[in-house]
Image (cartoon, rainbow, N blue to C red):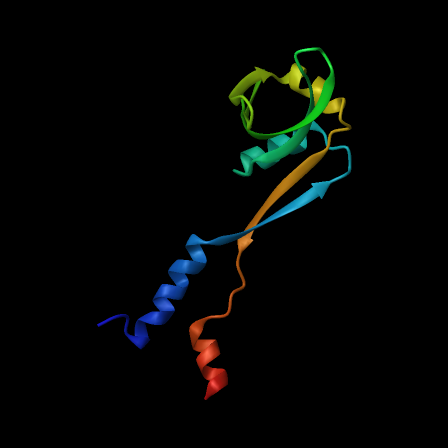
Length: 123
């Protein structure tokens, strides 16, 4: 049994749609909060570095994934503490302390070769 040759193009279309490429781009432009909101509204999370404090009050850099916001709150995933909801002003203060280091997530379609292209080369 298996997949008929004529159905390969259909499988390729399914794979292309279900596996988009992901690219991470460093943003060194000292981004504004509005640019984060724009990415969030486009459905793209944003990775930022914030300043945190340990139990002794010593500062350290820590990355989190911002994935939502409300009028005065920001929602983010923290690998150490799970899901966090915090005031936007508080987060901006922590982000400013680290010069607003930001990683933008760019999602696009993979440019993989299709099986039919490979087979045509061999013919």
